[in-house]
Image 1 (spheres, one colour):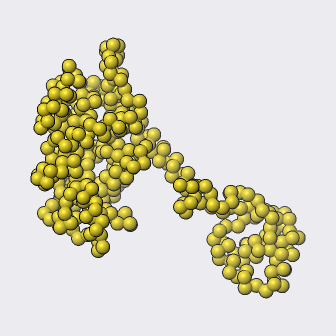
Image 2 (cartoon, rainbow, N blue to C red):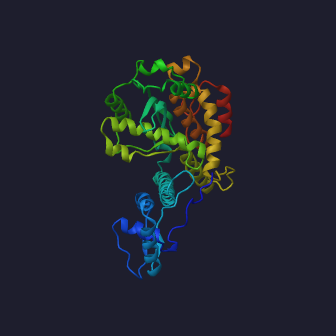
Image 3 (cartoon, rainbow, N blue to C red):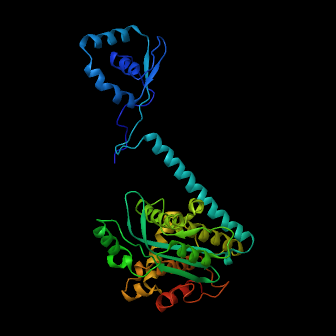
Length: 374
């Protein structure tokens, strides 16, 4: 896509013309001899039709005055890309996103290092989150379909989970076709299921979430799939963030919604794996384990294993029944835990248990996983 500016560059000076002189004065400003002045796009839009209504004599009057004045116009037009976005705003947004990404990754890395310094890395609890939707409107309102969280630590594996189907209620008129298409690609619920029994009261949903997270001093960091560095995965991460924000805002927890931290599990895998390799090589310099070379590398390895595990673990009753575990939020968060365990859990330090560190339903996968650590 061509993102080059469509109009002339900012701060370029041009000679005062009769037309620009008229526009400036029409907008209630004065032009002083010897002083550069400026003109904005909205001023042109407002005054140009009036210029067309002037007689040729009046136009010549402005042209003569402009020629006598020693004035240049400092062009303060906003620059736009090919899709109509202001380039300055795009640059600011990019800098903010890069700064947020840098801060987020520093936070994850520091959290893990602090836990390792306290010899608590193996017992640190991580929260894995997965969601799905029925539909989202152009105005940003999203209709959640399913929700699951898993608690995981390296020593215990996946040791607790919560999941529930959300009753979306009445969907917007005209959304049926898109809802059906989304369903086929994701959660597999029928359109009629939107009003089927499920959690409808957002206060009840919030109570369940709080009870599951309890005890906690503050809402923990949630990790989910999706990656800011990979274009096709940006929307996955953003969708989960929107659904969580919707749940919190529905119960008027606006401050908590702003403070929600939903980070990419690829980043957790990258820093956790590499920290473990660093620790192991300090203990055993002959350790053959190698760190990930980048977060994109971690993503590729995470995807490959996580998708396999989602097919081989326990999901919710509905997705077990329709044989669609790959689309089940509960199966996904368990798969997240098993994937982290595959790359980061150390068999010599604690026992790797089926159903906790790897799927109990697939003995081939289990045996392969156990051999890695022998």
